Length: 173
Image (cartoon, rainbow, N blue to C red; front, side, top):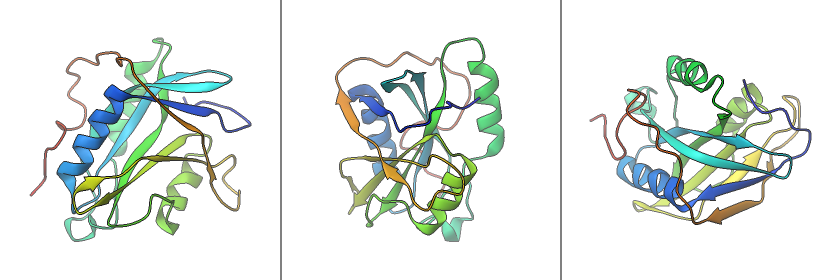
């Protein structure tokens, strides 16, 4: 269900996927936005083919400093990806007016999903900064390791309308 690599691979982020993430996180500001990274894993690099926008289902009062993705969305997406050659490579979320490094709360999630990529984006005053990617090799690892993030031109695969998540920029006001 999740990629099983011993060493952190490079993460390839096509412009089209970054555009989806960037637009979504800017629209969620000043709250945290979140989503799922889907793609293909390889020995040298993982290529994101799709950024799936998800609703932040954390308590409304906590959304400025916390995110939660509905686990039913993750399970549904895992089922839909079976046999496609694509898989959940990781997750993305924003840090409104904060640094793009894993927080203590983020580390809890990284420990639940080790060996997956975690794209963290600082959004300052509504403007997303360059993303950073993180990796935790094992649940008991002391800290996350920053991945090499390769920004690349190229189209991601269309996902069609699967009813997953919400449109980019949608708010839950």
